[in-house]
Image (cartoon, rainbow, N blue to C red; front, side):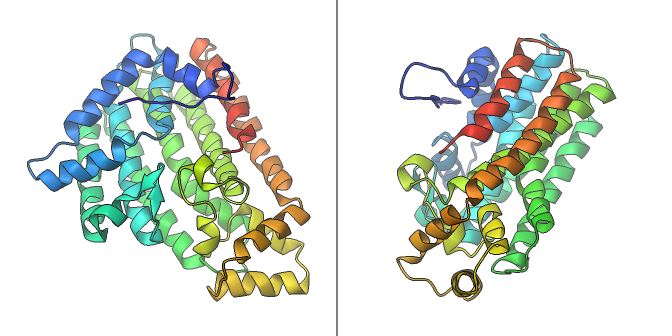
Length: 337
């Protein structure tokens, strides 16, 4: 099972994400071994469904951040079980999200709910949450258990908040920020903070890593939401335009609504609020977003979080790992797929 395979260009330039994976290769291999072992169950369907999604790969950025924060604080840090717990939490949320969103594709293949059904996906998601908590207990740290338990609760709240605001054209940027802070940034922050604490970091250092993870997660999700309107299925590994079809008001649409003509407002209301869409509507949405230049505007908002993440990182001990974490910031905000 490979942790990361993501080249910055079609040439030989290695992305900071790849470089981080190379730096942490031994620890990531050990983490993957834990993941493979702990996703097993005496119920064959549990192991089969878990393997279907986990073995498909993905960026593995959350466990990488856990390991990176730990190694940045101590060369002797051992955080593979913790990193596996973070990945299990993330994978469990993906299984549940795909059921809620009725998604058809995940990580370049049919989503687990399409292959195994909604009931099995929800229950195996619960199994992975339970496995995560077993691994969290094994850290022998109540503080780490508290951090990741709280993040799991916040993620669930974020999903409910997003569901309650789906199709609501009155959604504010503040409400959108609250959604992505819960659904994405909370686990990024928890991964970094818990990794630092696992390595014995003091409270101030752990807080700076938490801030780094929080702002990186905010930017990461904002860019993902922009890409949903600018990329295609082959590049993304999932269906492009999913947010549009599901009526989710994300950053590019919220910004476009602020500049919308009456006809454009009517269009957004029909598509997002009334869920009355035609095959041509996604392309129309992309045209409106391009007209108002909201992708560039959205990248500017994401850049503010990148700047805040970089500031937090500068307050930690500088190492080869932190240098790569700094480079990762620019990579995340500039990506197009």
